[in-house]
Image 1 (cartoon, rainbow, N blue to C red):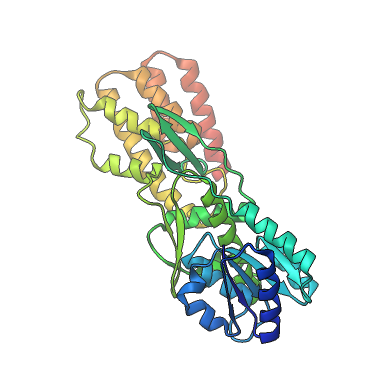
Image 2: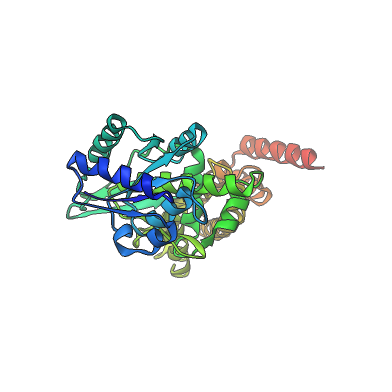
Length: 358
């Protein structure tokens, strides 16, 4: 393994380096008393492990860890601090470990053992014939398609905030989002320093989770902010909208394709979570879907295929209940099929909805 030690106190650097050398685990150990030099030095950015003092001038250990992991996601971080409260914070940041000053050799050896265990890599090469994708309709899910069978992958998010931040970056994938936008959106009431720490912690959680997944998503960072790279992984909402734009005009020969796309809309965009930031996209996509549903219903009425038109109305009603236009379609279709009780039931529900709105 290759390691770096960064501490603005030269003596502390030398002591940690000496103890690390005595473990016999590290091929190279480079020390820095200037965190900016460590951030900019190529060997530091390619190290397997970094031992970082949290309290340093100009650039603290937390910010340095973020900068190093932005170019090397697999780098393992160990924070060194003289204060217990920072040690607790280091745990919250999902660092591999923390060390309290003065660093004791037995404790350091335990940390090195943890680094070795955590550094055991598992091949994530995608088997031939397998593809992966992401679903956003209803909830956030990852899936694998193997031999034409779709199976969802188990995912254990450490926090709901990590899942939400990933979902937001997924919506913005390929575009950089500034740290200020992210902290204002996800931690609006936190002090700037605390919000920045929370952001780093959550980005770290996402990165570690993505390392365990069989596809290759990663978060890029530059001076502007963060961007999620999904390596051309298909996203159901994007694929659905693209398919909608490429549909042939609705007719007897294209109807099945239209119906298939209508059914592919499982629920509203991230409907399960109710993310406020997702509401504009949720509304936009749902309007496209509803307009498509109306065209299908009108076509089926012209074809006198009233039962299928009713099926579409009922599907819409489950996802978008109490839509006035769908209620009117249902009353019309129940009357055309002779189901007077059904028409009355829908009408009563329609009237109750109107009264509740007034």
